[in-house]
Image (cartoon, rainbow, N blue to C red; front, side, top):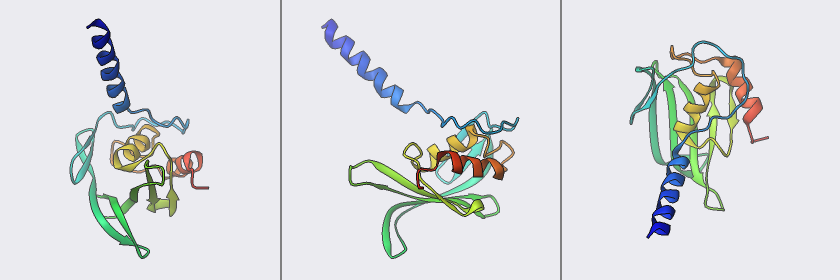
Amino acid sequence: MIRFLTISIFISSLASAQKDFTPLKLHLPKNQLEPKHINFANEAIYLDDQKCFSYVKKQNVIIDNETVPNYFEISSLDNKVLFSGIIRKNADGNFESKITFHPIDKIYTNSKVIGRNDLILNLSSNQVINNNCSLNLENLRLFYEKSNENN
């Protein structure tokens, strides 16, 4: 009985550890504008309890004559698309994403950044997205240069 209890405690701690977020450590220039709280709603992203971005998720969208199973857009509140991406399973059955950084016109992939939540959490922890809803474009360029796997 004790062995079973130990195994289930270990499995429970493993499951909760997988939910923890570890940001990419890119050593980008710091500022005092890093959000302290990030909340994700169905159609919005909140930084420090302020609605900063709109979010749209679509399924089975045709892009470049190909049906994409999952597509998303993150826009500013004035409806300017900042980031858009596709999420799909690769040949190994793992999820992967391809994200367009519209402000710098670059396509980004990183095996540790899959979808909206990973993207926003990494951008905010690397001082790209600020708590006043602005983007630090220089840090966005550096973020892309230091962590893009699409080279």
